[in-house]
Image (tube, rainbow, N blue to C red):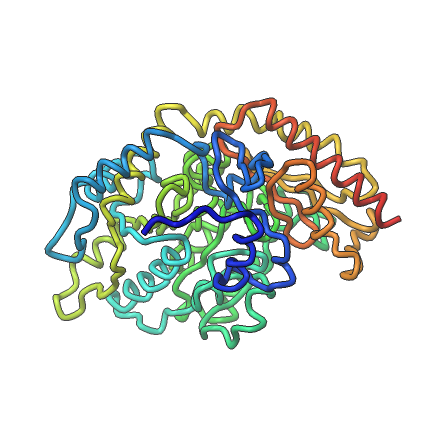
Length: 454
């Protein structure tokens, strides 16, 4: 069926009548930007306005928009084999090939991949897999998952329960049982007099306290983003994850690294825990595996977990499944996308551009409304406060996030604001001049908001 072209106003009306959006309320959707096309790091809407994509759309378009080689990979696979079941007893070529290519870039201790359609499914798969593992080991009481406040792991029921951002819980409770939250390594907001490195150890020790409170024989796993993303881009001190690994090993708790955002080069390493010489037991991934060109995610498990799946009797097999696990088109695009990331050394480019981005943002630190500037690789945040001394936020009636988003829109910048934290994560291919302009727009927009609320 060929659709007749609609005007922008007609599209908005049709949207309002028939489309529910993520995180939806109609008050937030009175004048949506309707994107029509994109190229490189520039998004264009139906009215012809252009925006610098300063968040890789949703932390995912790592290689930039409009890459012909990804479109071609999808088209050729659609022409060859559009879909086939990947359930036990069946397989397809691109799923096998991508699993093998991933083994070349993930942490050396990891052995086998299970494909999903996205990040929440990946974390749900991880949670089910750790339960499976402990049952297979004769420890069925180890079912609890420890996560962190301000962590984001998705918003399906179990993933939402691990997510530590209260706004996602309010209208969907009660949360799934067996989820425990600890404080994150949020140095700017921490009540501490210790230095960065000392604080990292203290923050990690919150995990040990929780394990002891809950009982190590009941705790299955700890899940953490190496850099907390949607919660406000919170990078840890370098001492944090080495101590986390020690604690997990001491109490026989599995460590799930949620690298849905940080994976595939975002932080200047292919995977972020490499910054601190740490390896997880399970790696969750999604987003940049296809740069958003197709929905794909997955988990990669270590030898110990893989062995447990292989060695159980058939009556106890790993009964976990998604219809689109190992989808041939998605994995074909993932293969082509991973080749771009490796061949163009995009993790290295992120590492090289990071000082430029942070230097530009650091110039904002003296602004009366800027409380903190932080980041790792091409992933950064500017946290706004009403009072630098007390670090107090703003009265909700001021609608700081809405004001910022309006200023960004006027100046041609696309990103997200979490509360009073401006999040930035541009494509790893962004030209330097566009990166510089994005940072200028952030500064201009903060200035405009400051004048408006005086």
